[in-house]
Image (cartoon, rainbow over all chains, first blue to last red; front, side, top):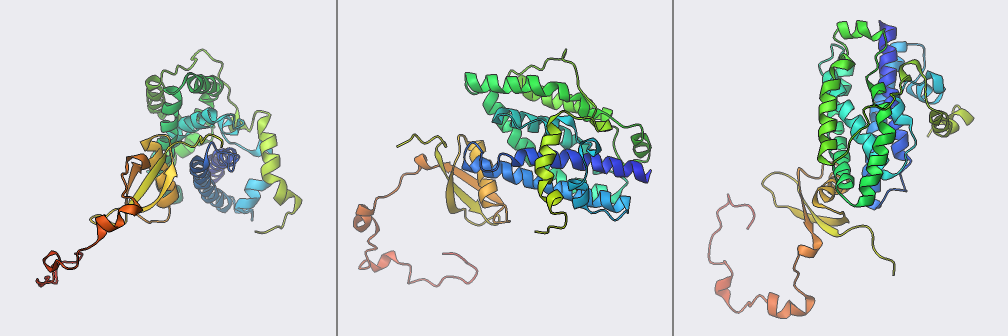
Length: 250
Length: 96
């Protein structure tokens, strides 16, 4: 079961740092100064959560690897982030809609993890929930601005939804080994989060006249380390420095 | 000059503790009140500077002009009855 928990924590950490990396790509390129800072702050929150999770994963593994080894010396197939987090940042409507979808999912997941029987996981979850509440408030406000804004902003957020929706089922996939963790009360059953997630996100979409294509073919595979072609490029950039100078410190 | 696309200006006021006055701490750009509030939180309260925030559209502030200084602010020191120097202020009263 220790191995199953290690894989599970890794999965949480990977989704967190890959999304953080995509958000961080906006640093210096935000729509205007204040929003640039806002998203950079959110990326930092995510990197902080990712670091705490990877530290715990490294401790569980007990093979002498550090959180940096786990972040910088694993390749694509060894990453288990939800596919939705690795998609290129797109325009700001795309970035914010992805955030709204993931924030809503994360808030439910980490709220449930706050009653985990695993003390470390419980601690990380309580700290992170407050942050996610803010991230969600931020992303939801943007979706309302886009959806109810101009003709162009409504079109952009609707295009973003068409691209993002097929990757939402992947968030709820569960590895067979996770069943033991669920039974031990360490993690929640992901399928139990789905009705609340759908309820929240569809309410938001309704409010801004967005309609997901429920007939769309759903893509998944992150649980097996299967990704789109985009993850490799992201990792190449994120890992370039530690791989070139393996003992670099900063 | 190129057009400013950063949205209107907002003034930010931070309250350190409940009961204390809101103190002006700077300004920022935002397109609506909610965005102004969120930006203010990121720019001015990330290090525990306050517990409560006000944002006010800068355009909503009416300011006195420097030319009015004499007429507006001359304290008329000759009218001693305007200054509460004849009273003892009890110790319990903090800010007067």
